[in-house]
Figure (cartoon, rainbow, N blue to C red):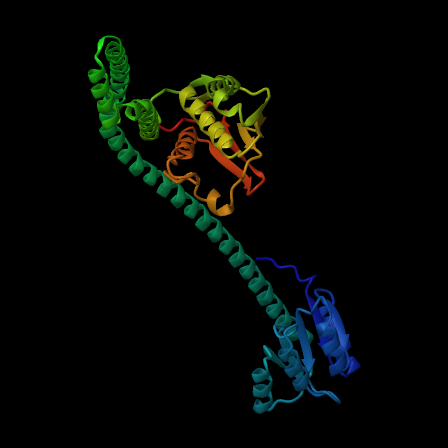
Length: 423
């Protein structure tokens, strides 16, 4: 591998001018060379930014010798990693050992031989550059590994959610099947009971009239006591509200069963090309009565291409988002529905200025049966169903919300017809 040394900065430290000139002449054509004639000046130049890549340090100098300079450089965090190459006329093994113990990477004995010095310097600079390349490669690999780990973690979360959805779906299908027939009996019987109660009320009123017209005083007295003792009149007053409440509860169970069926079988209808704006308009016509009293609805439908989707399922998503937005508004508020084209996706946004959500709630809103509503006022299935449907359409739902400010759900559906929808 060819390495460029022109950017490599060499600091020469020697009190002898002749030695400095020899080294500059030997290294100047290949490296950027600076020089110092004392230990104090050498430390100042070494600390200055940019730091030298290599220091050629004379051992024997007046004042602060090379050993002390090296010790101070290695003690300073700014300069401790700069390689030091000692140049000395001392040839004692103990001197060389001392220099290496202080952190020197090499030792050159005077008199200076330019070609030998150049070879030693080139070798050290190549080593430094290889280390920097290795460090950069390690950082790159670590970044790639972290990215792959993040991707795999994201995939694991998606697979875990899909597995959870599948398990809950099987449970939901079983529960819906078991509940469907009994609740149908209850609803039918309540309708019949309401009719029977009306007939009984008419019969009772007729008997009461006959007693008043043709009955003796004693019969009227006994009839009145029987009515009072058996609390007939309060029963007649209570029976219609009781039937109405029971019917309302049964209808709610029917809606839950329907939602469970939708949750368990979200792929009942096939895919076709559809205009998302038309889906919005038709869905709003179904839900307008539920939201018109608390919310002002604003439509900002843009020019968008058709998307290949299940009309029924996408309409269910729109319905769930609209109802969710309406329920988040305590008093009079506003709901805005927007459609736009962004790249290869059609975006459907449903925003409100309701109560919003905390970050903790946002993390769980697509979990099956999770709801922030009061007991009996939410099943926690609407957004879970919507999430599953959009996944099957190879899209995504993005949530932007702030507690007390409002929430915007943005559905992204691909328009690329080459994409194959999941089944």
